[in-house]
Image (tube, rainbow, N blue to C red):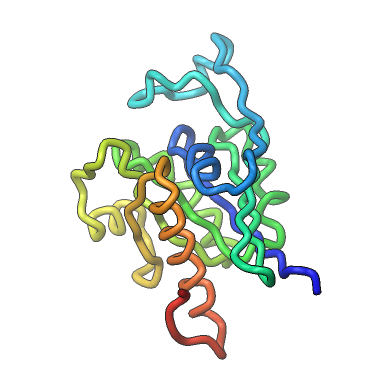
Length: 188
């Protein structure tokens, strides 16, 4: 019997850590489409708060996680810059849910990702990427700033840490399954 494929999207603004998140948890070397930032992108890519960023995703990131012999997760990371958002519809097609990864130092960079999944009715959670282990905002402050529905879960994660990303994906799975009529209970 073929394993069931489950598609999850990792989205967010420019420089929030999507490529890092996919790479931290993928059991295969992740496919990335990273390119060097160039002088030509300086007028269009806002590097405020992420001045050390040198690469950017221009198409997608891809990773895989085998849950068991029956289920395989496929992770698709979106590009963050506005000029590459035309790819989001293709990447989100068939997804069971999404993680909107946010940088708490630059919350406005994530408004478009939240709007995208809300407008399409795709279940999502918000993951606050704890870049330096701290976030000066509480979850409810982030919820208000992003104008999130109270039903949207907020988690804190470190996109560099495999176990932290795994926990985030479990929370997304629980949130997605809870929306199904016949499911109740935690994912193990």
